[in-house]
Length: 216
Image (cartoon, rainbow, N blue to C red):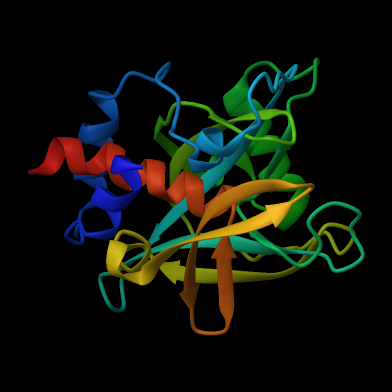
């Protein structure tokens, strides 16, 4: 697992919004993010993937000059992944005009932020999961701080996490666990009282890899 070991020993990234946009402009959107679980799938494992999208909202806080990422905690009563920390997002609807629209629509539904709150900076390659989704991460700058309106059926709380914390590999761990007789691997990063792991941490791993290629 050379990519994983290299990441865990890599230096932190401190980056501006302009540098993020420039890096994403140079990134091929069709190159998928490496999922550490792929190395642990049973041989012959095959899935028919469904499309989904998440938004990675980034806010520049004038008071301290830092960049913050908006994350949600899924409602505790949800059938899938209750209580987990996630980006706003969900399944692509056939009526959605684009995969970018999917991410913006889901963000409006989950936390009440309208599409005109955002300036799209770019996107990453898809992150495909063992549960059968190919998730397109869309990165966007929040251009105004509107009041949040949480959908209680889907969201328990929201958290603003410093981007520099999420782009520091020293804060990450790679763990393995047994599930249905198969070994599963995932990244994990903690901030204050929240634990970010699985798909969300895997997408952050992909964000780091993408940005690191273009700022050194």
